[in-house]
Image (cartoon, rainbow, N blue to C red):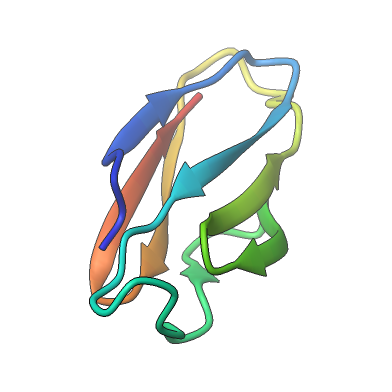
Length: 77
């Protein structure tokens, strides 16, 4: 399960990591997936999922999500 459920990021793009807790500790989880092309998964480990978010060229806010082990991590930009 994802330890943090959402994050707001700069319009200029950013990267981060979502911590993951599994039971038992270190157990594998299904490959994370995004629902928009501007969020990219850059790595996974037993501790979490690393991601990068492209810069937002629009003047309006946008949102997307990463599905991790049946949980949703929301990204707001």
